[in-house]
Image 1 (spheres, one colour):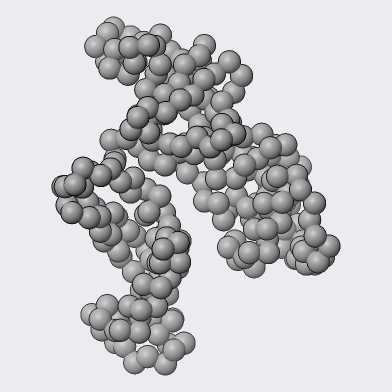
Image 2 (cartoon, one colour):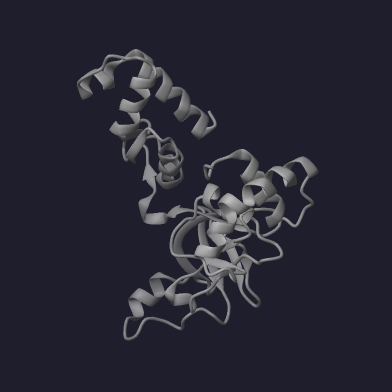
Length: 252
């Protein structure tokens, strides 16, 4: 049973949005519950109602798989300067892939460059004895600048895409958030590490470290007689396979 299995992701998505599960899908899920999901719940103590994830991005595949197992994970977002919660998901309205909506009495907006700004009673008054640093993180009309880049959908759900200081700027002046691209590329089982570069370049590129064990297993499965890593990196069949998988991951 893989976390990325579409059937189990579908169950997780339907459960997260409180929608009915089709009979055929519910039946397949029930057959998998005892040998797989029941063990997950037991490992977590058997009485878990909800997990809260924060501090780093949560893979949609992981969130959907856990939701399908009856172990829902909601995401939250905030900073030390915001006491620390700004937005949070809810058990009865868990929109997977987002950090939820602003909590009560808290406002969120996006600056022109996509930076997330917030105001409300949860925001600090300022840094101790650092008036210049305090002025730097507040807008003229009193909104706190988080330093994070995100998007807001039509229903007010916040999605974090990157840190502002980590944005790449091409020679043409276009800003690129590398983190989402890196996460999508790493979703390929053939990729071990990846870093996106593009500052002051005409276009963004990715430096990829392959997962050699996965590549060797794939080559053996396909009957490819490859011995050195240089041969792996230059084999046309592997390059085409890897390119196609990355395109699907990036939805190109």
